[in-house]
Image (cartoon, rainbow, N blue to C red):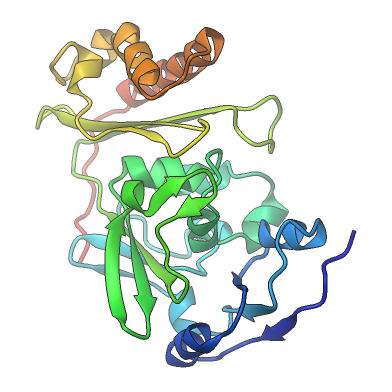
Length: 288
């Protein structure tokens, strides 16, 4: 199939883009890499009257370090991160995630902002950036606001964006020195959408951590305080203290009734914890 007819515009500044978005009548879609929207248009799963190409806005393609955070413009691609063209104050966590997304052709065009706005439960950035404590920066003609990613994504393919708003940047905090990171996804074959995802960021010295279980039927299952997964304590021996039953109970509470599905997700989470446990202590330069 081919998409129904629609108008196409390419603003070249952020004020012009936001103004056009605010004034548009009817359904409007924003496009950057088009790795999700393109197929949806072709299958007529969406039928906008206007598509706004946002790749002509320089601000959306920039990345910078700011006050202990990496600020990624919404149009920064997965390949930009994989190839090291942007700073990575997470000690390589972002680069590892980017390099495992789908195929290189997808990574060359797909964008971080587009992935989060699409809000596919099986998307890598959704789970990974939630575990890292990331935020989205949202803009409209009325101003800007920020939301933690776990609050931004409200359901499968659903976000908290209003009709006149767009994501302009993603903010990722620097990984604390000595923090451990694990990210594992289960796919039938390389490049396929994940059937289960787990991400953990654990700080043994501080006794705290976050854990995220993704590729579920809705938003990722988030444990902002991961201590219950480790019998109440996160220390240097966290890899030996992981309690699968606690993870299973968490998924039950989240509404996952299928025992086999829970087992797969718990196993993937256990692998992410084990992966984090194999890391040697690291010193990560602080972001400017």
